[in-house]
Amino acid sequence: MNIETLGYPIVVGQGLLGSVSEYLHTDTQKVALCFTPATRSLAEQVKAALLDKQFEVLDVELPNGEAAKDIEVVKAAWTQLADAGFTRSDAIVSVGGGATSDSAGFIAATWMRGVDVVHVPTTLLSMVDASIGGKSGINTAEAKNLIGAFHDPIAVICDVGVLAGLERDEVISGMAEVVKSGFIGDSELLQLVENNSADSLVTSGALLIEVIGRAIAVKAAVVAADPFELSVQDVGRAALNYGHTMGHAIERYESQKMRHGEAVALGMIYAAELASILAIAPPDLVSRHRVLLSKVGLPTKYSGGKFEEIRKFMRLDKKARGKQVRFVLLSAVGEPKLYDQPNEDVLVEAWQRLTN
Ligand SMILES: NC(=O)c1ccc[n+]([C@@H]2O[C@H](COP(=O)([O-])OP(=O)(O)OC[C@H]3O[C@@H](n4cnc5c(N)ncnc54)[C@H](O)[C@@H]3O)[C@@H](O)[C@H]2O)c1
Ligand SMILES: [Zn+2]
Image 1 (cartoon, rainbow, N blue to C red):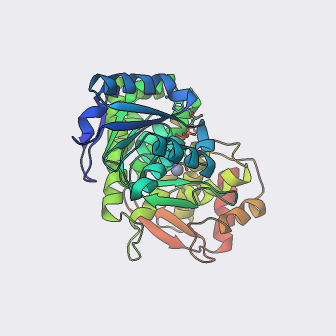
Image 2 (image 1 turned 90 degrees about the vertical axis):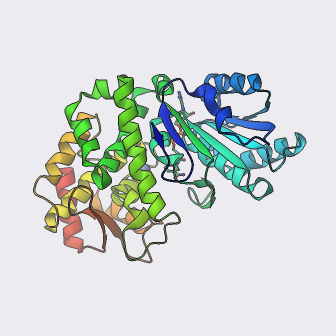
Image 3 (image 1 turned 45 degrees about the vertical axis):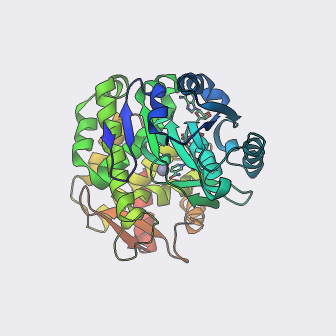
């Protein structure tokens, strides 16, 4: 499957690790391969194919997970590129999860004001979300993703075979963004999840390719319509934030002990309950959320914290404009709308429904 909506190829399939060179420009000679200890063996397969095609390959090992998104890691990579005489026509290839592609994308955006980058995502979340749409970034001591740049990759290569090496909970967590894509933009994707067992979703290659491809197509269409998140009239790129207002608040309250997808699943239930209380949602929206999310193994009920505690974190969300708390709510599947500052008692009522 090949998605071209964003002007660069996003390929989803099996056995694709050897195909990276097909997407590099003809004047590229050196490739900086960014990977982590967890993705070394996958990176080695990418590297072998690049060496076969006469590319010079520079290994840039980043730490696993969020530790890659650190300015000291980026500085060390800049030094490696300088020592290797890396020029403007050379390219970076990331092989890893969203933290790797965010950091490698940032290195690519900043080296000589921008060099080519190809992402080879190795988690479900990075296939359907992080590596799509050109946002790159690193963290500071104050907050996540505060420093970054928009820098589109020249290609994204999703080889579903790599997901076999991931922890099952990591794949389940990524399914939250898949379900989110279905709710904001593709009812057929929701039906695919509804009509197939959780096991067959993650084990059948053809089904997984279709599910991932459809989720990517939703994100790509949203990003193509509002690439820099500037839309004011319309929900625009903010649609991708569905479930994330409450999701991020719970995630912060849990101080990153809960997986992102689990928090987003709870956030989507909360948003569906809000839409139901505000009478803007179709009658079956909440039950459809509960059935779908529990089917893929995600939580639909929360008992971890008190509303007043979590509410504080909602105010701090960087996507809240000014002091307002802003939600993306669905008036129907595929119809996300922005909803600013619902009444406090409505927020509390939805909370009670999420927690009881
Ligand atoms: N740029 C964007 O638009 C965007 C969107 C969403 C999320 N993000 C970012 O993505 C990051 C989260 O991404 P993630 O969930 O992929 O986490 P991650 O990159 O931290 O990967 C999760 C863990 O899995 C390991 N791993 C990765 N691939 C593996 C494989 N195939 N086999 C075994 N282990 C593997 C990693 O080393 C890590 O320890 C966050 O930093 C987030 O801010 C960015
Ligand atoms: Zn998310």
